[in-house]
Amino acid sequence: MNRLLNVYLSIACLSGLLLVSCDTHQEDLNNIHFNSLDLKLVTLDENGVEKRVFAEGENIALGLKAINRSSEEVLFSNYYDLCSLSGFEDFMLVYKWETVFARKKRLVPVGRPFEMPIYCIAINLPVKIPAQSEVLLSAAWWDDNPSNSPLTKGSYYSSFSYEMRIDNFHKTFDMKVNFRVE
Image (cartoon, rainbow, N blue to C red):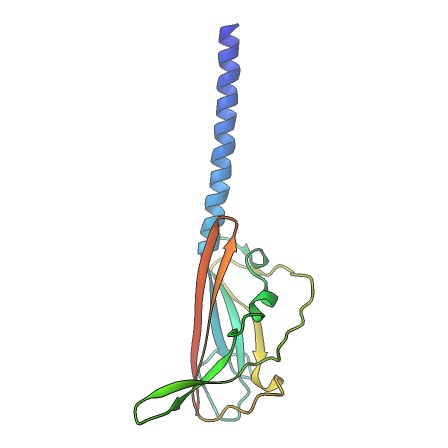
């Protein structure tokens, strides 16, 4: 009888160990995917080509790009919601570098490529990001916001920080883009 009890206890302990190690493996896998993701602010020309120097009068789009550096496809809706990002005051806010004194410059806010507030659909559809690839999540054209003035010659800047928290994982994305109009 003791021998049978020992066998049952051994099986129960082994099963428990397997369950815990499988759970830990899944958590490690999620952590790898989460840490392999990156977000980047980009500027695009009228053809959707990413670049940093534009002609005066050219329509410019600011975009948010997701980068998957892992070896597996990732469903990005598990990690973020674009609607929640647009609620941040500095999300895609564009500044122009202006000279104040001979060598001193300051950033002056000039607008954003969309009107506030943004009205979003209630469904957060997943975005598949293939392994080792980049996907443009969204882009907004400067000229689509009627309160914007055309961007004149000069240097511009936009930045945004976002802390993403999913279960036990968190990561801060510090995104910025510098671009010029010539």
